[in-house]
Length: 109
Image (tube, rainbow, N blue to C red; front, side, top):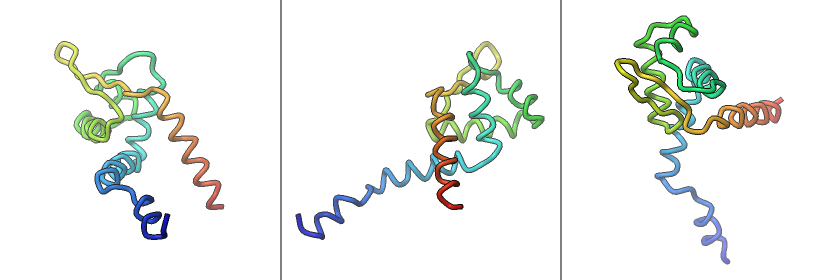
């Protein structure tokens, strides 16, 4: 394999870069990380109003953050009666993200 073919094979497709960008942007906010931590550690879906109370923030702000997490593919939002609840798509994901973050920060010391 020549060098041009090798480099071309290593390039991440634009669509993947966009998806990763949305993911890291969603994870790049402390409030969203707290929300992800809460819903990942719960045994059942959480009402968004309850998450807002736990975080001591307004519902509208919490919902905006939850919506960003949903758009990044990290959580699911659905309605139960007249309430909205949030659940992680992959409960183990937050633990993996936290471990990855620790690894990256330890490399920068």
